[in-house]
Image 1 (tube, rainbow, N blue to C red):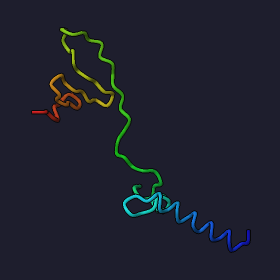
Image 2 (image 1 turned 120 degrees about the horizontal axis):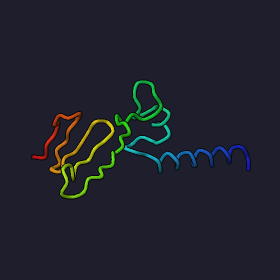
Image 3 (image 1 turned 45 degrees about the vertical axis):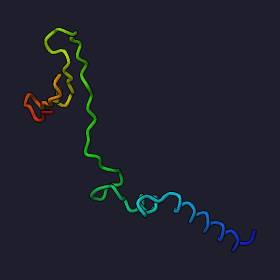
Image 4 (image 1 turned 180 degrees about the horizontal axis):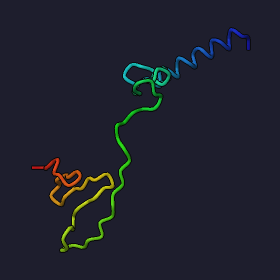
Length: 94
């Protein structure tokens, strides 16, 4: 192949790549290069969430505390669906 043919094939391949990888009208590669979705100069996306682990509740039905879920960040969820954070009720489904 001549150099001109190689450039034409590369041009069309790059165009196809950008066309197939568009999201909301912007190509995937430029979004990554520009850091779209990242904040304040970071290259990793910021989600605002920390990893939280559930603490196993070994209480059986009929015992006090059955139906509660506990998490290692101080959050707990009651059997009625109410959320508590560090002992204070912060949300209720009703």
